[in-house]
Image 1 (cartoon, rainbow, N blue to C red):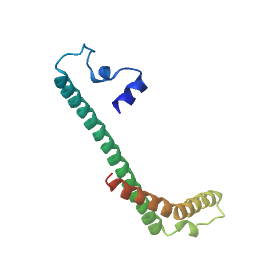
Image 2 (image 1 turned 60 degrees about the horizontal axis):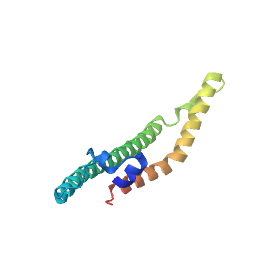
Image 3 (image 1 turned 30 degrees about the vertical axis):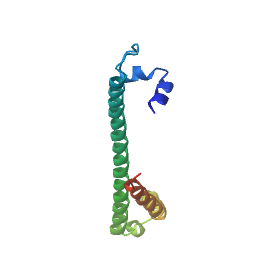
Image 4 (image 1 turned 90 degrees about the vertical axis):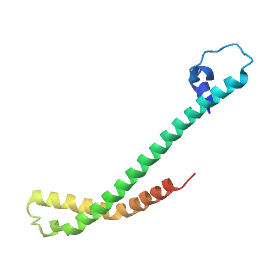
Amino acid sequence: MLISLAEELDTSVSVLLGENIQKPCPDDELNLKSISEKLETINLQLAKRSAMRIRIFRWLLIVGCVGIVAGFIFLGTMQSAYLNWDFNNPELAVAGTFLHGVEFLFVRIAPFVFVAFVTGIILTYRKR
């Protein structure tokens, strides 16, 4: 992975590791050990970043599910109160039509989005 990263950045691996290129010396085992330690720290940093992204994505999905449930609770408690309005008043007619359209689309689309969010949450909890 480090080699492909070096190729993309058009630089050498030793520059990415923060070392100057030196002539080979008899302490190759010591050099390999230090390089492997640096690679291990880079790998740990990348793993932590990946885990953090997954955690953030999972919590965004959970917040989305809570928002959908809250939307259904709100619409349930509102009980389509706009249907009792006097639609002869043009302002109320526009507002009632808008509210009805939003409620109609939310009730039709939100269950599918909720299932997709729950599926995403389940998939982010699976171990790779």
